[in-house]
Image 1 (cartoon, one colour):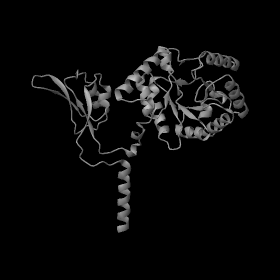
Image 2 (cartoon, rainbow, N blue to C red):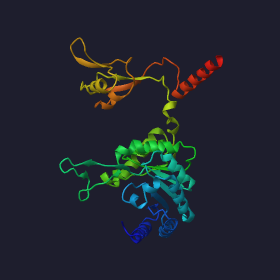
Image 3 (cartoon, one colour):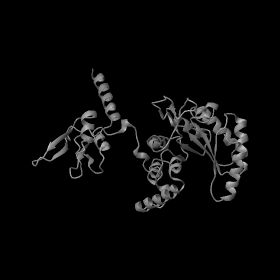
Image 4 (tube, rainbow, N blue to C red):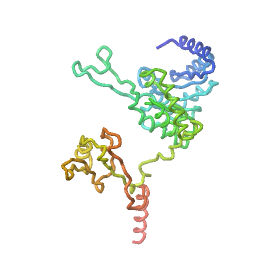
Length: 349
């Protein structure tokens, strides 16, 4: 822990050197109204442009009732956000933990408490490994270990899903700052398309330094130009309407794997994956010259995509849409039709 006075001094000096850049102060405070009021006022006085309330850190501070210990309880999220808004004169962002069953519950609580925006996700509870010689956890402190916070590219799908869940929620109507595995402009665009009005980057900067931000900005500009889009804000939320629940997906939409023999290197990874872990619909064949090749029996393929995922060669396996044999029908529509038929039959009796 660093003394608050040191942080205040550095915030003041940084703002003085870079007056045209926004400084957002990250705060973790005991869940006590007077403590929040005191620290928010002191930080506010040194010139910050906003606050990010850290209700997400899963280790170290959680044991003291801060971080994710607060962020896992919607009532505490709402209450503490409200306390901050009582004295804050700058925008308040609430940073949420992914270590919870439904992040929309705490996101909605933050909105109810008056948050100007929300950010997600913080790190995920994790244990990195165990030393097979000493049986110590990795890492350990004097022979004992505890969970840490997992971050980086592997958490991107989790973060993107949580951003999308909040973006489509009817009562979560504040800007969303997305983070978790953003390592290039492409991930930044994905987060924006799924509803984030901005993104944050940490792990990638640790790996490559701050210069990576310049690469991201350049890549984003080139992408916008290629699409004829004038502003990044025109990207925000454009893919949210395509994100739905399983029960709303078309049961009769069919795709199948198709192997491009001109590109395939006959490594047999797809064959092994399909044979041992899926629907056993890839055959090993030979042409008239004896040259071996792989062929998908499309009538048996269920479109699970496993073969294309294990394939090491780009373009060797495509998932192609098959001709439609039945009209569109979702699971929810099917269940509704069954229920209606059941009622009709019961009334007929």
